Image (cartoon, rainbow, N blue to C red; front, top):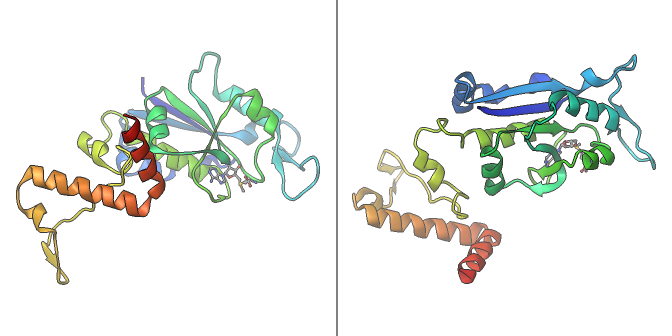
Length: 235
Ligand code: SAM
C-alpha cells in the first residue's frame, strides 16, 4: 500500500505543483505515493458556496466554517481511515525531522489547509486534529506548508531517494546540522577544498565531517546543541 496524501484546500489546483517534478514527481508516477487534493468548497451547499463567515467577538478577517470543514473531512476520510489528520497552523507544534519521519512511516496523511484567519476551533477539537506549524511566521494559506511537509515525507519513502545513506547523513537525521560539501574543481577562485577530503583516508574524512557538523551545530543552532548535549549527559 502506497503512502496516501490528501490535501483539503480551497485551491486544489496548487497540487501537486512542485511535487509533480523531480524525485517526488517520479515517485508519484511510479505509485510509491499518491496524492489527491479535495476542494473544501465542494462541501458548501448554499447558493454562494460559502466556506467562511465573520468571527464571533469581532475583529478582522473571516473564519472557515466548522460544518463545511467537517463535511470535507468526512468526504475525504471514510470510516476506518487511520491516517493522521493534520491542520497546518502557526499555532501548531513546529515541524521537525523526527515528526517528518513519524508521518512518513505511517499510511499517509490528511492535510487541512487553512485560509483567511484560520479554521473554527470546534472542528479542530471535534476531529482531534494534530496541529503542525512550519515555522514562526505567517503564510497566506496552508497549501505551501502542506507541500513542504509532503516533500519532506516523500523523500524518505522506500525507493524514492537513490542513496539511502544520504538520508542517514543529512542535517537533522542525527540531531546535528550537516557538514559542508565540496566538489570539482579542487581549487576555485583561490579557494582550495579542505585537504583531508582529497586524502582518500575514509576514517579521517569521517572524523573531519563529524567535527564540522558539531561545530556548525554549536555555532548556528545552540538550541539543538544544548538538546544533544543534554541527551548525551542522560545516556
Ligand atoms: N490568523 C492566523 C494566525 O495568526 O495564527 C493566521 C492565518 S494564515 C493567514 C491562513 C492559513 O495559513 C492558516 O490557517 C494556516 O493553515 C496557514 N499557515 C500560515 N502560517 C503557517 C505556518 N507557519 N505553518 C503552517 N501553516 C500556516
